[in-house]
Length: 166
Image (tube, rainbow, N blue to C red):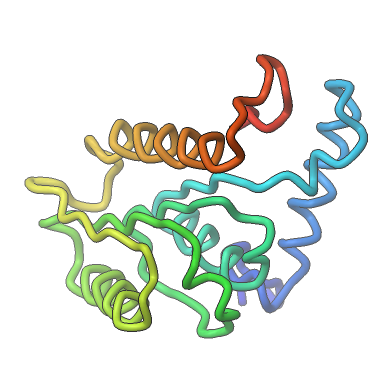
């Protein structure tokens, strides 16, 4: 808590999940997708506390997440539903980042993998607490997830379909 308020990555302790769904609903209305943009599966990427948010959100709302990327976050809530273990994810840590972040990320990843989660762990060489080259790999990961999802449905959504809003 900061000044009595919930820190945004602490999804379970505040209304941050609702806030994201409300924002998607509002955005959907603005772009003419008022019927259900907030119900479409999300690809979530975050750096530092944003990575923590991505993981924590996926734990609480696994039905709403297609894939997520944790990029060098350090604190995680243990409030996950089993559904998060079915979501593809990449966990990045920087080789020269602080030890507590490296430990948090690698241990979170290890627990998930022991339970069968389709997660990858990437050590980014010569990188501390920064995006580095992980952004490019994350984009390719998201493309692969979208492609696999479209293939699984045996149909590619038409151009402009809100499925492709990333």
